[in-house]
Length: 142
Image (cartoon, rainbow, N blue to C red; front, side):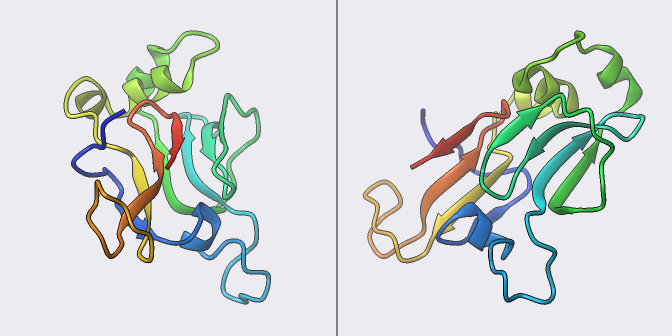
């Protein structure tokens, strides 16, 4: 899958997704541990899509969202939510949340880079993309 030219919610530095957001450091007093990185919320406040701090994408979580999302909490508009089937896939969720991106540029949602990595695609000296949450809600590791 080719690299997208950018990302909707940014490119972050870290050796892993957890370290990029400092959610894996048990000695950090400023961060609650094991926070989600990304959440998509239904109009009722339930979490319909989550990206955990370990890089796992879950869909259709029946739990009410907490305030524990490190990067983004994306609220769905009622029309987008009503367009979803009973058990939507991650792709259907992101098509409803970001239709212009999903059906257009297909930029990644987020990217994690490792500044010390060497990668021929990104050029020598670092900045290689090591994790991507793709436009369709899938995760990709490099």
